[in-house]
Image (tube, rainbow, N blue to C red; front, side, top):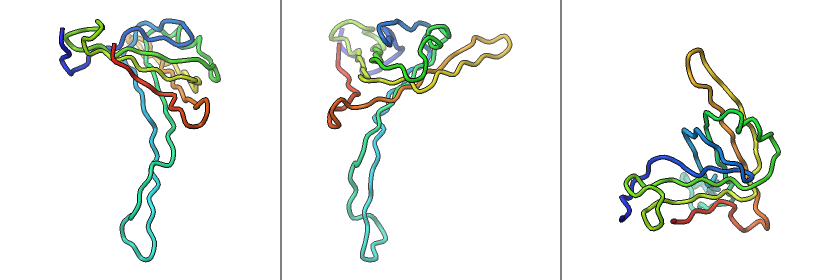
Length: 141
Protein backbone atom coordinates (compact mmCIF):
# COMPACT_ATOMS: atom_id res chain seq x y z
CA UNK A 1 0.00 0.00 0.00
CA UNK A 2 1.26 3.47 -0.83
CA UNK A 3 1.94 5.96 1.91
CA UNK A 4 -1.02 8.15 2.89
CA UNK A 5 1.45 10.85 3.97
CA UNK A 6 -0.48 11.01 7.24
CA UNK A 7 0.57 9.42 10.51
CA UNK A 8 -1.41 7.89 13.37
CA UNK A 9 -0.20 6.17 16.54
CA UNK A 10 3.19 5.07 17.80
CA UNK A 11 4.18 1.41 18.04
CA UNK A 12 7.28 -0.60 18.88
CA UNK A 13 8.40 1.92 21.50
CA UNK A 14 11.53 0.69 23.29
CA UNK A 15 14.21 1.91 25.64
CA UNK A 16 17.16 -0.21 26.77
CA UNK A 17 15.59 -3.17 24.89
CA UNK A 18 12.45 -2.96 27.06
CA UNK A 19 9.12 -2.44 25.29
CA UNK A 20 6.95 0.39 26.59
CA UNK A 21 3.23 -0.27 26.15
CA UNK A 22 0.15 1.90 26.68
CA UNK A 23 1.85 4.73 24.79
CA UNK A 24 -0.36 7.77 24.29
CA UNK A 25 2.24 10.28 23.06
CA UNK A 26 5.81 10.39 21.79
CA UNK A 27 7.81 13.43 20.75
CA UNK A 28 11.19 13.99 19.17
CA UNK A 29 12.81 17.42 18.88
CA UNK A 30 16.04 18.38 17.14
CA UNK A 31 16.52 21.12 19.75
CA UNK A 32 17.97 23.61 17.29
CA UNK A 33 19.45 26.84 18.61
CA UNK A 34 20.01 29.83 16.35
CA UNK A 35 22.55 32.58 16.98
CA UNK A 36 21.76 35.92 15.32
CA UNK A 37 24.37 38.61 14.66
CA UNK A 38 23.91 42.32 14.23
CA UNK A 39 26.28 45.24 14.55
CA UNK A 40 27.08 48.71 13.25
CA UNK A 41 23.65 50.03 14.24
CA UNK A 42 21.73 47.21 12.51
CA UNK A 43 18.09 46.97 13.59
CA UNK A 44 17.79 43.41 12.29
CA UNK A 45 20.08 40.39 12.26
CA UNK A 46 22.37 40.28 9.25
CA UNK A 47 23.56 36.73 9.89
CA UNK A 48 21.88 33.81 11.61
CA UNK A 49 23.54 30.46 12.14
CA UNK A 50 22.57 27.19 13.77
CA UNK A 51 25.13 27.19 16.58
CA UNK A 52 23.96 24.14 18.55
CA UNK A 53 21.47 21.30 18.56
CA UNK A 54 20.27 19.60 21.72
CA UNK A 55 18.01 16.70 20.63
CA UNK A 56 15.36 15.47 23.05
CA UNK A 57 12.55 12.93 23.13
CA UNK A 58 9.73 11.99 25.44
CA UNK A 59 7.16 9.26 25.84
CA UNK A 60 3.87 9.38 27.75
CA UNK A 61 2.50 6.02 28.77
CA UNK A 62 -0.10 4.36 30.95
CA UNK A 63 2.53 1.69 31.69
CA UNK A 64 3.79 3.53 34.76
CA UNK A 65 5.83 0.52 35.91
CA UNK A 66 7.88 0.60 32.69
CA UNK A 67 8.43 4.35 33.04
CA UNK A 68 9.39 4.08 36.70
CA UNK A 69 11.90 1.37 35.79
CA UNK A 70 13.88 4.02 33.85
CA UNK A 71 15.67 6.02 36.54
CA UNK A 72 17.24 9.38 35.72
CA UNK A 73 20.74 9.01 34.32
CA UNK A 74 20.04 5.70 32.57
CA UNK A 75 21.73 5.55 29.15
CA UNK A 76 20.50 3.62 26.14
CA UNK A 77 18.69 4.13 22.82
CA UNK A 78 15.09 5.30 22.62
CA UNK A 79 13.26 4.00 19.54
CA UNK A 80 9.66 4.50 18.36
CA UNK A 81 7.81 3.84 15.12
CA UNK A 82 5.25 6.32 13.82
CA UNK A 83 2.62 4.43 11.81
CA UNK A 84 1.19 5.49 8.48
CA UNK A 85 -2.53 6.32 8.85
CA UNK A 86 -3.59 3.77 6.21
CA UNK A 87 -0.55 1.56 5.73
CA UNK A 88 0.22 0.92 9.39
CA UNK A 89 3.76 -0.31 10.02
CA UNK A 90 4.34 -2.37 6.87
CA UNK A 91 7.57 -1.90 4.95
CA UNK A 92 7.18 0.71 2.22
CA UNK A 93 3.82 1.85 3.59
CA UNK A 94 4.96 5.22 4.95
CA UNK A 95 5.79 4.35 8.56
CA UNK A 96 8.95 5.90 10.04
CA UNK A 97 11.18 4.74 12.85
CA UNK A 98 12.84 7.40 15.00
CA UNK A 99 15.93 6.63 17.07
CA UNK A 100 17.54 8.77 19.75
CA UNK A 101 20.94 7.15 20.27
CA UNK A 102 22.88 7.82 23.47
CA UNK A 103 19.59 8.78 25.11
CA UNK A 104 19.91 9.68 28.77
CA UNK A 105 16.77 9.54 30.90
CA UNK A 106 16.25 12.97 32.43
CA UNK A 107 13.08 12.50 34.43
CA UNK A 108 10.07 10.17 34.78
CA UNK A 109 7.22 11.85 36.68
CA UNK A 110 4.05 9.85 37.27
CA UNK A 111 0.64 11.39 37.81
CA UNK A 112 -2.90 10.21 38.26
CA UNK A 113 -6.26 11.63 39.19
CA UNK A 114 -9.33 10.13 40.77
CA UNK A 115 -11.18 7.87 38.31
CA UNK A 116 -8.60 8.48 35.58
CA UNK A 117 -5.81 6.34 34.20
CA UNK A 118 -2.43 7.22 35.64
CA UNK A 119 0.31 8.23 33.21
CA UNK A 120 4.03 8.71 33.28
CA UNK A 121 6.17 10.81 30.97
CA UNK A 122 9.82 9.97 30.51
CA UNK A 123 12.02 12.67 28.99
CA UNK A 124 15.35 11.99 27.36
CA UNK A 125 18.34 14.14 26.45
CA UNK A 126 21.06 12.82 24.16
CA UNK A 127 24.75 13.27 23.55
CA UNK A 128 26.72 12.93 20.36
CA UNK A 129 29.38 10.25 20.33
CA UNK A 130 31.87 12.56 18.62
CA UNK A 131 30.40 16.07 18.79
CA UNK A 132 29.34 16.11 15.14
CA UNK A 133 27.12 13.03 14.68
CA UNK A 134 23.46 13.76 15.34
CA UNK A 135 22.10 11.25 17.88
CA UNK A 136 18.58 11.72 16.44
CA UNK A 137 17.77 9.87 13.24
CA UNK A 138 14.74 8.57 11.38
CA UNK A 139 14.22 6.13 8.57
CA UNK A 140 11.35 4.81 6.47
CA UNK A 141 10.35 1.22 7.09
